[in-house]
Amino acid sequence: MLSVRNLSKTFAGPRSKTVLADISLDVAQGDYVALMGESGIGKSTLLNLIAGLERPDSGSVAFDGVQLETLEDDALTILRRQHMGFVFQAFHVLPYLTVAQNIALPLVLNHVPDAEMNERVERMLVAVGLTGFDSSLPRELSGGEMQRVAIARALVHRPRLVLADEPTGNLDPESAAQVLGLLREGVKREGAGGILVTHSQAAAATADRTYVLSPSGLRPAG
Image (cartoon, rainbow, N blue to C red; front, side, top):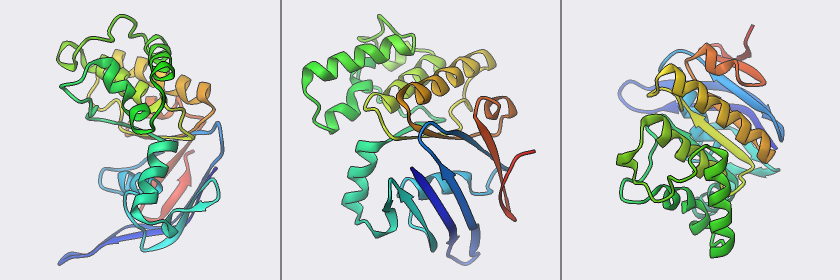
């Protein structure tokens, strides 16, 4: 489903810095992998390249056989909207929308009919343990509850690939464990591929396999 080959990225400027060099990674449907590494090593940059949010200097990213570097920006936007889901450390829940409206956003953008949209949102509320919270605003939620909303939003349109960047970084250990369980369960239930970027060994342990990113490249953990 996802094939990353010999990916490299350098940020130009007075202090030019190569953050990724010759990175390769495969993720099949149903795979859930973790990426670990020191701060600033390029984990988030790698996710951005995989999502087509940044362009590599060399190498390729193939998603379902489509080479992302050959697509124009509009085509990349449509691909992300339809086939990818994102979970971030900072939640990115819109404060002026209700829980149900936040979850429904990908369905609205993909023009899903109202009846199907309502059904999918209700199913996701149940799946992430937020039944009865549909009319709540983010300011009424805990951090763990907001991250559950973010997970539901990432999965509601049944993406082929879920990218999670430090999704438990702002959570207490109990909430983090619950969120990690929901994220893994959701990826597996939807038959998606998943990539989890984390500093936490406990979080990485929820993945099927773990890779470590270092200046020398990407290698399996252990």
